[in-house]
Image (cartoon, rainbow, N blue to C red; front, side, top):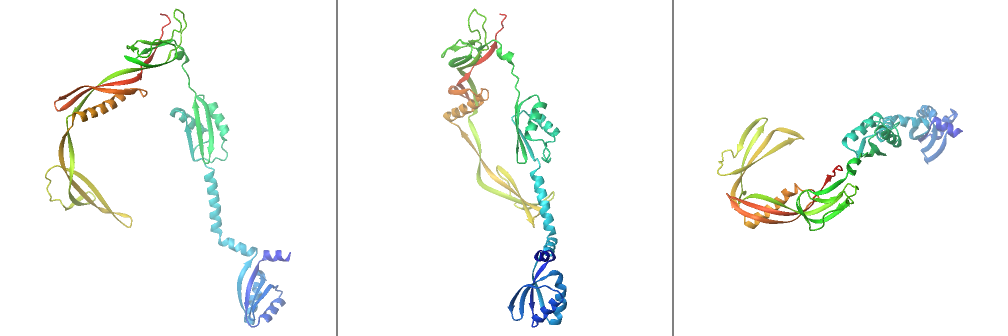
Length: 393
């Protein structure tokens, strides 16, 4: 109990130096002081433990016995309290830091929604906001993901399914929209007819009865597959499938026979000037003449002093001398360019599944400084289109 009492009151380790140490300690003891853990360092020096509340007595008697006292260490509640007072700012900063981290980790920072159209996504965001789920809100007290999922499905009829997942400080949502199929349209009896002329190279009829075979040449509008399964019997289906045919496209190209190239010979003439605000002052090279063709480039140099931009800038105007050269393309090179550009132009008008299988130059002629090319491209594409059957016929 005595040690605990001393801990609450405070204990100090003190160094005592002097010639009359024994007399000094006897005087302190007569005044009621308690001394523990005494260690003699030398004849004139000892270490000992005393109570903090008796420190005044030791200080009163030290002058009489010419003793020097030095505090080495302190233990107990008073010293801990004193240390805490010294570190109050650190403690407060630590508490504030803990609160700040707690708030950051429990704040919703982002909501990501995938799989929905922009209109439906906006509707979901509006509903989430009405639930109190929006970026910047504290997640404590928010509905859990399962409850949010259930509310969204009940409140938004266009949602077939939605998944809500909390990942750290964000919500991840993935939704599936209800698709309304036009069953009447897909079940209406129909045929497949040719959208253009071509030679059949491949057929794949999912529903219906095929009417053409590979290598058949068909015309535009010709039936390729019928939804009438049995002749003379009213049994109809919605014909579906693909008929890949070889089709032909004629493309006309006009290319310049001669090309003018601008070449720089490497010679540069520079002009320098200073710009102060809207004022521009010529410094060097302004007297040089400009003979021939030039290409100009301007470069601005900014100066800084102590990371502050100065109001004065250096403008460098570079003149690159240009040499105009005319090149005349060969027949083979022009045909190659024509085929490439023609194929690129044709692809813009074809479906993604179409494929160019070959090309041929039908006509090559020079006209008024240009080359006229007529090209024939061979293409494999799906020519089957749906044509509905009128059952009253």
